[in-house]
Amino acid sequence: MPRLVVRYRLTAIPGPDGQRSEPGSGTAEPPERLVSFRQGEFRQPFRPSLYLAFNPNIDYHDSGDIEPSLLWDMAPGGVDKASHVPTWLRGRHEEMVCDQENRTTMSLDSTNIPIAGQVFSHRYLQHNPGFLQIATPNSPVGPWVDPDLHPSNHRLVMRTQQLVDLSGLGGRLTEFTPRMATDDEILAYHSESYLDRVRALDAAGGGEAGDGALLGPGSLEIARLAAGGVMAAVDAVMAGPVRRVFANVRPPGHHAMRDRGMGYCILGNVALAALHARRTHGLSRVLVLDWDVHHGNGTQDAFYGDPGVLFVSVHQDDHYPAGWGAAGDVGEGEGTGFTVNLPLPAGSGNATYRAAFDRVILPIIAEYAPELIIVSAGQDASVRDSNGRMYLLVDSYRWLTQAVIEAAETSAGGRLVIAQEGGYSESYSPYCTFAIIATLAGETDLIVDPIAARGHARNTTSTVVNAAAEEALASIENVQREYWSMLRG
Image (cartoon, rainbow, N blue to C red; front, side):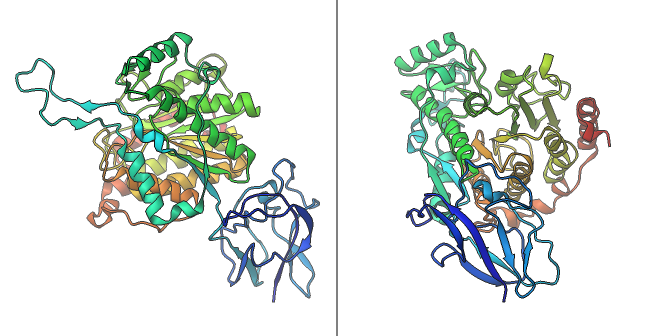
């Protein structure tokens, strides 16, 4: 029978039961309290236990002669190594391929080992942008007697967290505590005059920081906590051993400009986190991928002339905000070519988004080779969202997440932060967001798409790239070939 032997160096990392492993080193078969064995046919992905946690401060390279290493004892035939040294030696998870044929292999059952984390605070639910009054104040019939809650209300984040808790997924996640962004961190992008104006609005009990960016009582502190929460997620994946973290934060941030709020956004959460990653962790190449249905104009503005951050936005064409996100907007100065816009026609579904990723986004990411990936995740491109006209489903967000996981594993040491942005279907967006978090944790079947029975996945919108979408993709490819050799084929 094959036997797994690990030469290990343990660090004092909390395990799933809250206990801490004892530091030390040696050679041993992992104790049963750390992992359990499951014999049978080799399967992928191979996910070693976080409890066998390696020192993330030691840089282990993918070579055959390192210490420690994972060895397969194929007695009596001696020791065979896997096809490459698993990157969990750096203190993280990654899929590992074993190229040994015709052999029975052993896998570790890590079903109770957290491989992903989450940033959340109930304080986020207290941001109150007020009610949406549809009729104009001077209308003889308005405003409505019973106004709607604001589209960017607390329910998306709250209901997502309820799904995490009720499904049991919370036990598979490492919780990270958000902190408030400091003035210095905010001023890395926003102007001092804007921060002063938001302070004054906050002190007055609320107001409008820009086009549709509403503050209620205490909203500035919560906005600081949202921006600081995404920074905390960055710090977590940089420190390890958890390398995938979802920041379930609000208010959102990708529309916030340097000198004004915009589109429900007060502070540029993801832009500030990318700047934090470069300033604090010394990174030279950060990818920000924005799949919100609306263009991430604030994030683009922050890095339009900066080659150190590749900004990629896939969004509905000619939507909000007006005048932003054209395929020809590619950056300026030294940043030329490092802004990639993919405006897709209204009605685009699963097939079109897959084509956009396969033909444009993933090749560009591979060529850029980011050291960290941050995603602005708005689930308002779903088929049920009132603020967009796209056709994505719960399963769409699963494969989108899996695609960026694999991209992060390839070049970024697995370091991936996904931050909540938009999503306004109170009955459907939480399921889409939950699918993202579950996929980060390696789970794909905890919930069923609540509208799966309606057959949306079989519609041609989901299965076919139509003529309008093909024309848009061809135009995008034509623009980007000038800057990315992998698109020249």
